[in-house]
Image (spheres, helix red, strand yellow):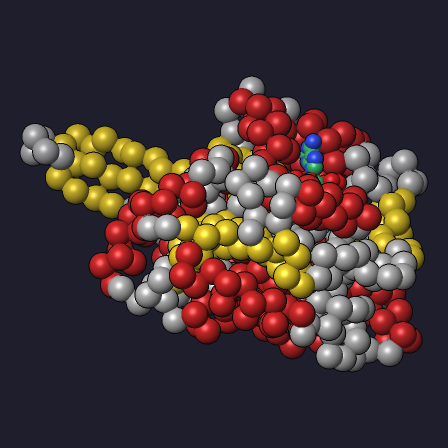
Length: 488
Ligand code: NAP
């Protein structure tokens, strides 16, 4: 654990300016944006508040660096990622404290995110040298088909506050590996982790202009002129479905390549043949990772009627035992929510469910004091019309609902506009395959409560977006395919 002095030193060690063309500079308007500690509601520091002029300067820098960067040997690009991976791992303690201060989760959870974030750099350092094309005889035998893969070009990357570093490395890693330059706009609540990451990449030898970082409190003013500029070739966004829809609309004019990692409403299915204790363990992970503020968070627990009460009681016992408090304190398992609005939304959803007849098995209250705490909560007997079954909760609340048979479970799971991830607990192999085939989500946790893995394609369907991050698929999002028809 850091002391207060240590915490201040960690915050002081991060650059607070904009990173444009390899230089750290103040915002052109001279304004700043305050960063808050969600466990106290107090200001931690201020960072530069970019203007549309700064946005254009960042895009100019990315465009200016593109040709040379695309021509940089893949091995050299990979080595930069590899060095950055090592530096992140080496500085885990300091980066974890920083992340906890601006985002709230426990230092242990921040360290886990940092390990996950760093793995994207290691993974894509290896992918950088494996970009291939193909050559084959055309079907009529007369010519040859040659394909090559080339970087898409300058990209705009927009990321949310819930995973301040991993959502960045999941985009920056493949962009660097593919040979794209970029402008990154992190969320205004958590700019420090991204600035620390930019410093690490700079120290790892990333050339000026390849990565440019804009912190800003007017995200739309800063991103719109970049999206509207014909030199931009790709927009990759992680955040809410609502904002994703707007950005897809804006990117239509330039016909940009787009990747959209959007909201979720994950069903967690526990069949009658499941190992209940394993399902409860998985449920704790799927619900409580990141204080429930994860797109992959289990949003609703559909449990076979016969197991419903046992599952709810066992889950309540686990969640009720989790200590809530400031993420830098020992033994704390659940930090604060990101801000007052988020806590208000969680409280409102619980109130709506209980007014409609749900019972509180454990929790159900806001925490005391200045931070944005909310107790880990289990709700039983949740009625079908409760809003939290339809909306993304983004907090430590687990609604438990019964189902009668497999068909009903699948229908309930798919009854949402979202389609990011679902979780299935069963010991019947045939059922597992049957259910996986029918679930309308981009990812499934089968007898496990966590799916995130840099070696796997992360992404959703339906209103959870399109495109994949991680795995062999991750780099493809940053590559164009060029076909050459060869006469022989
Ligand atoms: P958000 O409000 O959509 O914001 C995400 C990012 O977009 C932030 O950087 C934000 O900047 C920016 N932004 C907001 N409005 C914008 C606009 N009009 N034009 C351009 N940029 C804009 O989402 P959030 O509340 O930060 O994050 C939570 C959401 O992200 C949840 O729905 C969660 O499920 C989703 N998420 C999805 C994944 C996935 O991989 N599918 C992963 C993590 C999170 P400001 O900070 O300045 O508002």
